[in-house]
Image 1: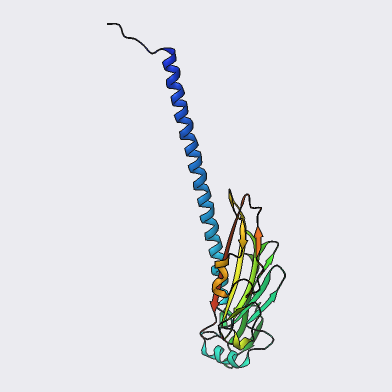
Image 2: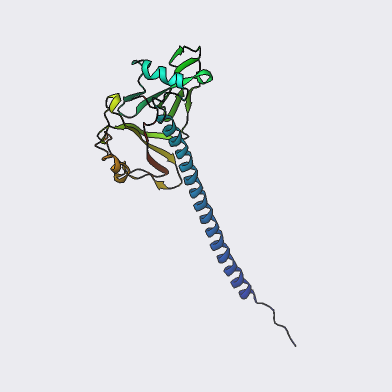
Length: 247
């Protein structure tokens, strides 16, 4: 019995089919890898952004806090210097700056505190502070004893602070201290990205809708059309001034 082998044409056909399958598999693998890399980059960026917002929210919540120590709280409730407001905000054309102050005592009083006093018991009481501002595209956290530290690994495009007063309305103008009920900050960042997810109008309409809209809080919307290789993230973080706060 004669066994017939494969012809050259048949071998070439098999090789061609295998090549097509390999190319298709390779393209699928590359596409899947790129998709995974983009998703990882997006997830990492969102995580970093949330960390920045959490830091800001935590610090804003300390504004005017009078300490858990009864003696310190009693003294500062009556003797807090008017020259050191619990919230100090300056509005810039592009970026705002906010300084938050709260009371501390004993070992929690650093050398760089804004104000210190010796309490009747001999304990040290002080007013601590932390500021947030934008410098060279980075959000800076300037804590009294630590000094300026960049807390954003990406470029800040907008940093705006606004307030809610006793009536419940939100505004870009700072109310008198007794009328402040909440503080909020709108933050937008731009990040290098393998794609184009940075186009659109910012702030997004729904982002500031709960606060009365962009106009109500003094933020001018911008429309971005050139967004190749960019990702933009925006968020509002707010904190109510409650519990042992000095209004």
